[in-house]
Length: 519
Image 1 (tube, rainbow, N blue to C red):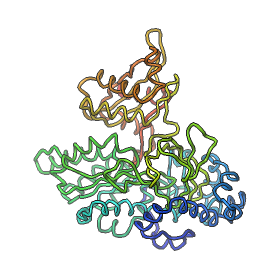
Image 2 (image 1 turned 180 degrees about the vertical axis):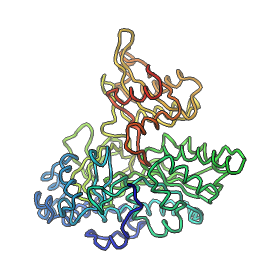
Image 3 (image 1 turned 60 degrees about the vertical axis):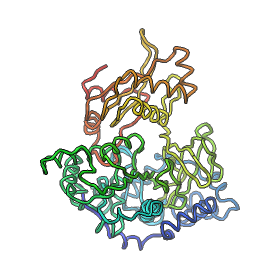
């Protein structure tokens, strides 16, 4: 059963074995001024904290911490560990065994993918939950610092965490979405003063019913800030306008008429860029956006300047970073070795006991003074079945350009290969659920085709040679992706995502069946 859990966070934090963070903005200033020194310190503190655990003894963390160059020694002696290397130990931690990858016991596990029984469960120590709390405060305070406008503090914050529950096999252990677990450690002032919705609504088990209850509860409130996954904000804001018409007998076409003081949207979980235009249209008045990049493994970057599109990499949040160039997978680079413009997969070692763990995300640095990144996709987010090598960030940029040039707005999309047939060359099929359809689907396809031909030499070579067909756009009925999620997931929550790309057609064919389109 879902619960409104948890421990009294301040009491739990007395158990922590990790140095407490400084004030959020002081931490940001210090790691910005001394990035390499900060990351070296983080690594040594991690190794020292975990030196007497099973993993610390296995790899002799104490000796690595004393090395002349702990970063080089760590790369040499501690190999990359994917989730399967952790799975058995995670099961042991869930059963209450202690001192395995991190000192003490673990009481919180984030469902990174799949289900609680068969998917990936990432342990979250109290130290990491505390660090993530300070990270969130840093994002909010940096926004205030850059705008010098405190007005959003004088209304309500609508924050919607994901679902969590008590592990039926381990009483006292909480399992669920990282945003839900993190809510347990939210600052007292946020929970009791700013938060618009009480916990008995926030932790309702059924997602659609929860959104309806949130709308009813906040309809006449002074909501000034929103923090949630943007894909679900689109749904919530649409419900809000419909509910307002029912309650007040007056039709509204913009959220600004309901929440006139709405000032800022704090975004995370999925890329904001695909949804920003639609949210702006729904709000119908100027609104600031502050995007952050947080995963189950740790909260990693945020927009310290909301006018920029990139994010400041947080180098002192209990995470030691290593970056692996996609075209040189044998190299593991520390922060001082990265270059602007190169795609890297991220590997992390954390104060939750992950060691050289591949997160699965791909980033690109836009600056190294300070270190700023863009998240450009997943390591698995590439279509290369026919040598076209189209990355997830290229596909996302292409569909955003097509929307801008054709007047379209999208809710979700999925891209999949189309095999060659007797009548056609291979290509890509784009399954798109539009909030507002384009003027012409052929024009939409053409814009995507031209954009990919401009930015991707592998793609354009195949197009110019006539060995690849133009994008095939399939417009799906409204609600198709939600119906697919509900049919294929044990639960649909704040961070449930639609995969953007797959080289097999299993997912795409299931979506087409649900939509009634069997092309």
